[in-house]
Length: 75
Image 1 (cartoon, rainbow, N blue to C red):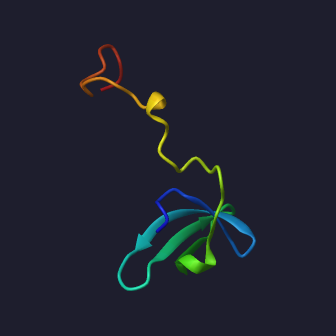
Image 2 (tube, helix red, strand yellow):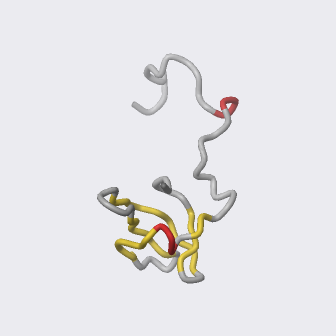
């Protein structure tokens, strides 16, 4: 299963996974780099692009703390 936001290659073009349908065989809606939207693309038609940044950041890069408000920052 591909995660939302994963960069993929579809028919030789780069795209971004923007939605997925899990009923039956998983299908994905993808947005091509030129802005076109492809709906219900089969996972077998999509090739994940390695190093696309969709993986979770390492623990050292994740924010720490209580998750409370940011004093002096945007609320």
